[in-house]
Image 1 (cartoon, helix red, strand yellow):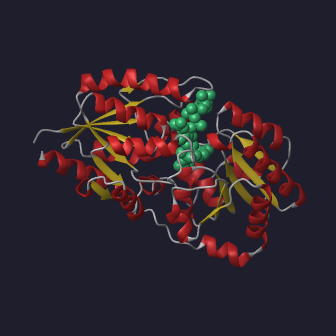
Image 2 (image 1 turned 60 degrees about the vertical axis):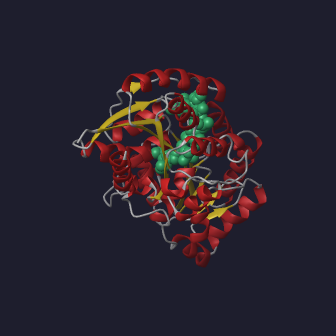
Image 3 (image 1 turned 90 degrees about the vertical axis):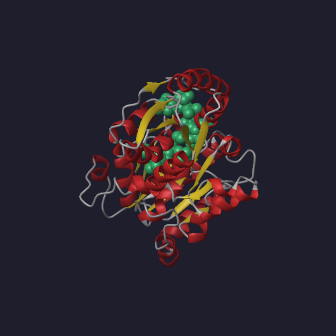
Length: 372
Ligand code: UD1
Ligand code: UDP
């Protein structure tokens, strides 16, 4: 049989982490698939960290990143540069992931070349155009362009059906985040950050970067965090700060220079997953971290007003607290003081699959190719 040429396109840290297991699966089945990896380079250092951990060498890098880049410049660069590569490589299908600008622009570039689009992590929704911004529109628009939908959960499948996407093209696969997680967490893990933390103290792991949180919402949450650390000597914060200059500035000015607040560079994914496994609880506005925490048994305070991951809220691991200072403070104190509530959140079950999503995705592509 002729090999199926699959082009995987991604550009940011979370896409890379969740696309890596798919790429490794396609490469393992090299008698069936010819996998071509393209990175847009929407992220630079944070993308390179993931490529290095999973030993992935892209065939093409569009190198689009600029400091403080805008959505329009990113979109137009990806569209122009990727179109030429799709035209030259002529893949059977272009696989995109999630909801970034890379995802949407790559979907349009494939459509312009009349090439099939497969959307990994399809069907997540808040139904709120500006929350998260621009991700909600990126994923809705990508789903309009897609031919195969790899929905991580039944909920995401239902969302796609609600928008009249064709039933026979939607497949519930589980989330590839769990595939990745199965390869990273180790019992004997060591990292210098762990040595900084007094074992008698509770470590809160923090990440925050979303566009709609930058400015006042982010600053007021950071102020609450600092206040809690100052009034609770048994608490430490570890915060690997996103490389976005706006986030760096806010974190350094409000959370900097405190001996129990560790502002560190972004961690590679092995370090981050293992540190999360050592944390007491997590505070984040990240999408991917919300999927990983249930598997690690860690409560998460979600620093957003909406989430496209209601499965984790229903399971009990995630609590949506937004960015109102009183709500954030109350939720932090409750997790620190109320052991019953803490255990309830920590014991929840992982709703994101069994860690075999990548194999299912490869099988579905192969079947689609054979069907013609
Ligand atoms: C992007 C995605 C967001 C995702 C996030 C994951 C869009 C619109 N946003 O947001 O959905 O949650 O990635 O982290 O697609 N930078 C560096 N080095 C890096 C990465 C970023 O210096 O390795 C700096 C650059 O100045 C860049 C800025 O961060 O201009 C913002 O990067 P960008 O990809 O536009 O936005 P993110 O907030 O990272
Ligand atoms: N992550 C990482 N290093 C860090 C912080 C996060 O590897 O310092 C991982 C995390 O485990 C998750 C992903 O990055 O898999 C989430 O990426 P991010 O928060 O940047 O984006 P989002 O998921 O919000 O789109």
